[in-house]
Every structure is written in C-alpha cells, then in structure tokens.
Image (cartoon, rainbow, N blue to C red; front, side, top):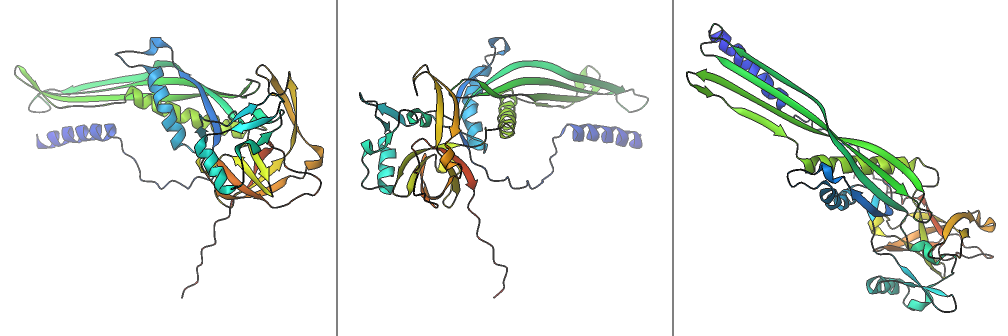
Length: 357
C-alpha cells in the first residue's frame, strides 16, 4: 500500500511540475546599438466583436502602445515637430517651442528665431515623422486544447483518487503596417501571433459523501496577450523595415551656420556625443506645389555636386535636436536646410586597458 501511495504522489508531483512555468536564467547577449526612428501612430484598434466582459481590446492596445515603443529600441513616438511658418513672400521659418528655442540659443547665442530660414522646397521635410504606423488586432480564436482525467479504485489505493488536467490555448492574430508620410504608400507590413495559454488541474479523494482535493490553475490575462502581441508586432515591423531598401534611419537638417548644423533628433533617438552622420543635399520632385497641403512628394534625388557627403560629428545631443560640427568643409557648396541625414558611424567606446600596475 505504501508503494502505491508513493506512485500516486509521484504522478501528482509530475503534473505539478508540468504546470509550473520554469525559466532558465540565461544572460541575454547585448543588443547592437541602433538609432530610434521618429514615428507617429495613426491607429491601433480591434473589431468591437472581440470585446467581452467589459474588456476593450482597442482601448487596451492604444494604452499599451506608447509603453511598448518606449521600451523597444526601434521607434520613438514623437508628437511635436517644428512647424514651417511661411510669410506672404514665400519665405519660411521654423516655428519651434520656447524650450527648444532656448536650447538652440545655448548652442548659437546670436541666433534669432527668424534666422532659421527654410526654402519652400524643403520647409515641410522636417515636419513629419519617418514613418506612419498602424496596427490592428484581427482575431482571437481557439487554437488547441486537451483534457486528461483518470482515477484509482479502492483496489489500488485505500481511498478512491481522481485527477483531472485541462489545457486550453487561444491565438491572437495582429497586423502592423508602415506608410510613407508623404505619399501615404505602404512601405512594409507584417502579421504576428500571440498566444493565450490556460492550465488547470485538480486532485480529489472521495470520502463518503465528500470530495476533498486541491485545485491549481494558470490563466493568461487578455491584457498580457495583447501586450505580447504589440511587442512582437513592433519588433517584426522594425526588422522588416531594416530589410527594405531606403527605409533605414534618416533625419533632416534644421539649421546650418558657421561650420555647424542642427540635426532633427537628439538623445531621445539614442544619438550620442561623438556620433558621425552623412549629409546630402537633395532635389525634390513634387506633384503640385512644393510642400502644398494636397501635394505629393514623388521622389528625391541627391544633388550631383554633393555625391561625396559632408561628414558631421555630434558635439551635443540635446532634447529633440543635436548640434554637430562639419568635419569636411567644401568651398563651392554648402549644406541646405532640410538636407538628408544618414548615419555614418557610432562613436567608438574607449579601449579598456588590461595592463596591471
């Protein structure tokens, strides 16, 4: 009898071990450094028929999205951009917040707000993010399940014993898309999954009219499933964009003066002092008037006399903008406002000395 009880106890322990969520402590490899892209979320929603028991998928996903973008090293949700102010003569200047203007004045003490002049062709290029992003929860459906039940009669153990184990699995399907901020054309799209796993087990002993025994369960919350889906989607979309031609990190020049430039984007994008960037002047092809409300940017071409880019090095990565020094000045050309900014190389970490004193 004692051996039989030991067998039963062992089987129950195995079931408990199967249900427990065991994780191995593995030290993750350090993630390669990369810059975040300025993005704007157009929408993050779900069909209302998915909602149940007062749980709203759209509201939950919208609330969680900003946190996902913040914790992931891919995108930065920028909601405030410089605004071009165009006067009656067609001359444009940048309208920026007082805090940003105060920051610029610490870098360029003699600068006046109206001194940041833009051409009509380039004034709007700094006013929009690199990508518009939209996401949707498409479905939440049953995926798989199992139910295991067995018991022992009094001939095997002293008291009748029953064991029941149940597992249900549901799958959430999500889609994410990125759009060009000027043409509204689709630039990348991914579909991802997130799983809801529920386990339950109960053990019982029948004693006359009574059934005695513990129950255990593990249920994945809907908000947890939604959060995991958003994380998977943002990561997959970012990696897909990295593989797409001409969709790598880019920014624009806000100001250029006396061998220095002002780059749109600062520490919030991961820019650090010592980082180097390539600067290209461009000619833009518009359908309609340049930067018009209903105009479409049909394409941009690097100016022939600046195929060899300027190289600038960041001296101060501020809030939403950075000050950089031009390393290779050119006598016959200058950097235009609105010029394209691409990453050249990250600042090199100082070598660690291994010598012993």
